[in-house]
Structure formats: structure tokens, C-alpha cells
Image 1 (tube, rainbow, N blue to C red):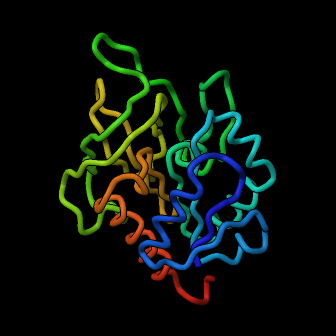
Image 2 (image 1 turned 60 degrees about the horizontal axis):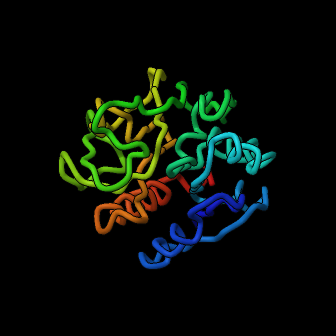
Image 3 (image 1 turned 90 degrees about the vertical axis):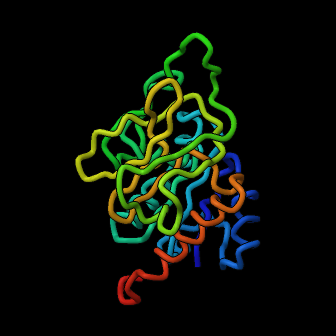
Amino acid sequence: MIVVVDYNVGNVQSVRNALDYLGIEDALSADPAVLLGADGIILPGVAAFGFAMRQLGDLGRIVCEAALGGTPLLGICVGHQLLFERSDELGEHAGLGLVAGRIVPIPRQAGLSIPHMGWNAVQPDGPMDLFEGLGPQEHFYFAHSFYAEVTDPEARVAWVDYGGRRVASVQKGNIYGVQFHPEKSAPVGLHILRNFEAICRRRPPAAR
């Protein structure tokens, strides 16, 4: 079962609706035992970084314990940003530190709307599990004003061009993040969620 972290931040129901549409067994929970026993965890979020971290509270330690123990973890939007070490949004805030890097504002430029809202093309640098079976460039739906500067040498990234190359997705071992909203990205977004389920199913039973 894939467990969506219940921490009262953002797009939980739309993510669950997408999973239900795909026939993926899922649950919404803030119970540490349920999270630690999950086949996979999704950390969603639509909020400011610092607020999201405060809302996550002690569950952050549980999410890290599960991920470091091998449970596949997918962060979406702010959930993706929380995977990193720090954020500069409305002050400086510590993140979960699962991926080395920092969350910074999209630079303001003439003719560039902030926040970045709408569909844009995403291109992985190379093979990435979440994008398996998709074309070399697909369009996904974005809604954000901050993005990740990834410094982790173990991480793979996919890019979106928005006033320059910005990180749209990250993969480090069993830890995955997408800045875009797969649950709002039509068939290609649903494909991302199907791929995450496949990742969870590939995890050895003895490790669950």
C-alpha cells in the first residue's frame, strides 16, 4: 500500500483521487506505524516551506526513517522541496536533508511571470525511474515560485526551462521528487504515479 502523509498541507485529496483512478491501493495517515509499514510514501504539499515543515513536525523524522530504510518516497511540489537541506522562502528554514541542495526563488526577469503557473516541458538529463516509458520531453503542470538548486552528487535531475534551467524532478536512490503536479498533468502525470507504484512493487518483500 502507498501511504499519503496526512499533515494538513495542500493537495492531499487530488493526489488520492489520482491514485484511486489508477486503482492503486492507498491510505491517508499520520500514524508512524502505518508510514513505517508502507510499500511507498507520498509527501504532497501546497504551502510555504516553513509552514509545511512546522505542520510535518515529528512526522518528518518518521518519513526520513522510512526513506533511509529503503521505502520509496515521492515528494510532490512543496513535498519535493522538503526533501532538501534548506529553503530561503520567507526566511531560512531547515528541510529534511535527504537530498543535498537548497530551495531558492525563481529569479525575476522581464516578461517572466512569478509564480510559474501552467504547462511546461520537462527533460531528464538521463534515465530516471519516474519517467520510464515516457518520451525524452513531456509537458507537466507547474505552480511554484521557488525551485531546488541540487548539489547532491548522487542525485539525478530533470529540467524545465523557465527563465533558465530549473530543476523539475530529482532522484536519489529510492527518494524521488517532482516540482510539478503529476495529479494535475493528465495522462503523462498519471504515468508518473503508475511508475512510482511499480517502483514500490519492485522493492524486495523482505525489505518491507
